[in-house]
Image (cartoon, rainbow, N blue to C red; front, side):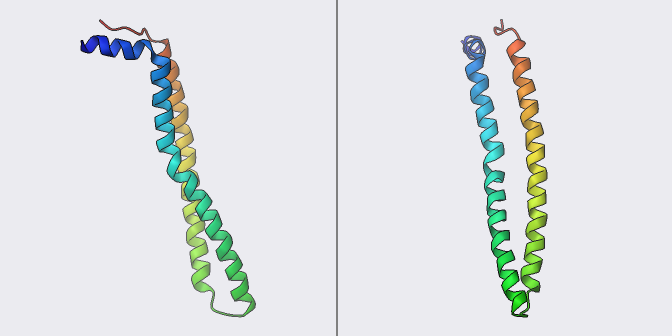
Length: 106
């Protein structure tokens, strides 16, 4: 019974691999894409605020520090995205390998 269920899943490996790939990509990409957009929006707002404060000769050190922190965070997220792209490539390679394998087990 168990072997039959495994074989049924493996014989329809295009559907199985497609679902697996989509699930992994969803998990990998969901958080960071939103984060980069949020960081860019926050940076734009802080940069505008920094210009206003500098024009009025107010203390803008706190905003400057926040801008540096966000730039560092953005760089980390971009590195994570590169790593995620490498993982996606490995997933594609794994999928190609699995498609070449015999489908049934005994």
